[in-house]
Image (cartoon, rainbow, N blue to C red; front, side, top):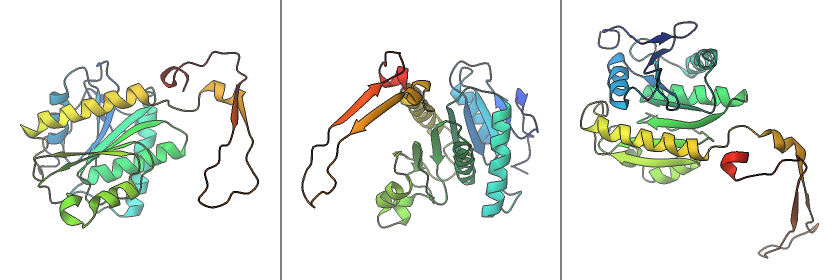
Length: 249
């Protein structure tokens, strides 16, 4: 009952009714989040405030016994729903517990179809699976899914599976991150990570990249344990002055 009541509510329902929106008039980059239940969605929307659009998706917790095939099917459905909203890319996706796994699959589906995902936020996922994009891994210090409490070398596992992730720990137990005072700390982390990727993520390949070329002169053989200097010349054939990364990609 706690998962289904109160019924999911929001300002906007996507094409097939799988995504709900809160604060959708806000000016900050939209955040798509896969929740375990509506209470989490409502709490996070209020804590983020009216300037942060939040789009909520259901993880299927206590409703669907998810298999890997089910995750993939739901991820494709959510990816289509996200794209149906026509929001600007790059996208930011997140999720907690089981929802973190589903958001990760959704992000992978989007990237596989050439859509830009700036960041995946994984909050206390029950398992760790490979993800090559930018990720923010957030875990409760006393949470039952905390890998640092479960594995001998959790840092190595995280780096192997999430090579481009940040790691943050909050002093919480399982189920406390959407309750105060933890919720305020969580929102501070979310804002920091969203702001960071918006300032640094270059999105898809810029148009000028199709009009650039380079030449490299490397030796045909290289001996082991030696350092070689390899000259590389980059040509800007676009007719456009290339600025810094944030402007040019």
